[in-house]
Image 1 (cartoon, rainbow, N blue to C red):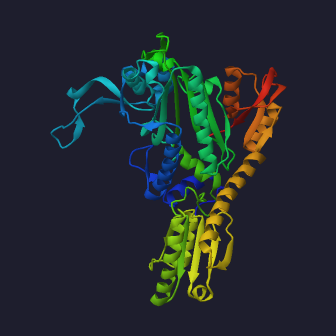
Image 2 (cartoon, rainbow, N blue to C red):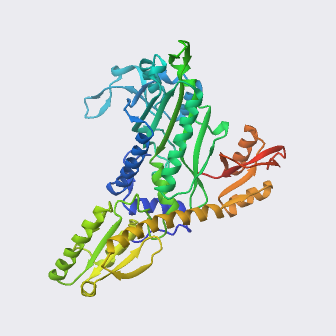
Image 3 (spheres, rainbow, N blue to C red):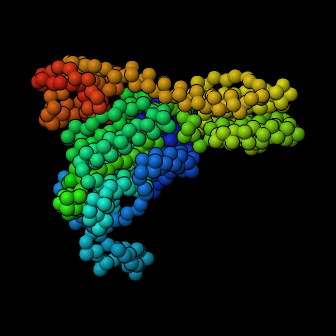
Length: 490
C-alpha cells in the first residue's frame, strides 16, 4: 500500500484529490481538465446509473441518444442560452489532418467546415430542433426523453469529479401541452433526485429554487438540490428546469390543441452528473479513506482469510462459498480475497481505503469456534460473532450502516445551518464556521452580486415550502419576507 492520505482537517482540497487517486477512483488524463475514471470508480457510477435509470423509467421516461456535435447556428437561436454557455464551448472548425512533409501532423487548412460545430455543453438546442419534426398535435405530447451522455464545458480550473472539461451525465428533455404539466414534470424530477441522493448516496439535501441570476441559461425557473460537504461548502447535486416556451419559440415547435388552435410547446430539462461522485466522497469519507454507503458500494462485504496452511484456507473457502451463496441470494455483493501476495494487514488497510462497508476476517481458530470477526467501515468498530445466521446479520448490518451514514451527514448539516441577521457576523461566520447561512435578502440581483463579490458566498437556493417571516435584508436593510440559504460552494 502507498502511504496514507493527508488529513482533511489539514488540507481538505488535497485530501480529496489524494483520496480520489489512491482509492483507485480516477486519475488525471493527458488532456488538461479531463479525467480517466478507473474501473472501481466507474462501477460506482454504473450503480448510480442503474438506479436512476429505473427511477426515470418508472416515471414514464424513455432513453434516446442525440449527436455530440451541434451546429453553431443552433445556439444563436436562443439568446440567453448561448450567453450562458458561450465562454465554455469547444468548437470544431476542421475535419481533416495532413502530413506537412517533414513528419509533422498538422490541420489541413483546406478542410475547413462550412459551419463550425459545437461539442455539446448541453443538448437543448439540437433536441428541440429534432422535436420540431416529432410534434404536430397534442396527440404527440408529452415527450418524455432522457439521454445518458458526455458533455464538454471548457473549464479553466478543474478538479476530479467536481469540475472537469468533459464529464458524464444524464439529461432529460421533455415536451408538454401546458405549462402546468411542464412545471409538474420539473417538480417531479426534483423529487426523484432528492430521493436518490438521500436514500442511495445517504446525503441529505435541501430542495429549493435558484434565484433568477443563478437559473439555468434559458430557463424560467430552476429547481435544485443542495448538499453540504464536510468542509462546510455547498455542492449543487442536481437541477431541474422549467424552460417555458423559450426553446419551442426559438425552434418554432408548435402543436395543434384539441380545439385545433396552434400553440408553442412547453419544456423542461433536468440532469445530474459524475459530480455526484464528488458529493459521495466529500460527504462521508475520512482520513483513512472512502466511506461508501452500502447501496452504492461496488463491494459490500469483503472476506479476508487468515491462515498458515493450504488446508486451513480450503476449509475457510468452503465456508465462504456457502456464505457467498446466501448473500448473493439477498442481492449482496461479496468478495473473497484469498491473494497470497499480500498479508491480511495490507488487505485490511486497502479495503478501508476503498470504503468497503463491512469486512469479515476468518482464521483457523474461528473455524474451530464457529465465529468470525466483523469490522464496520462507518464506525471502525469490530465484533466477534457466530457463523450461524451470519448472512441475515450482515444484511441487517448493511441496512444499519446505510442509515447511520445518512444520520451522521444529516446531523452535520443541521448543526451547520445558522440564522444570521448581521452582515458583519455573516462575513465572520463564512470564515470561522462555514456552512449554510439562513439570512434575509431584498430580492435584487444587485444585492446578490455585491454579497458574492465581497464574500464569495452565493445564494444556493430559496428553500421550497420556506417559512415566511418579516425581516430586513442582511446587506441593505430593505424589507424581506423570507430567509434564503447562502454558502460558499463548489
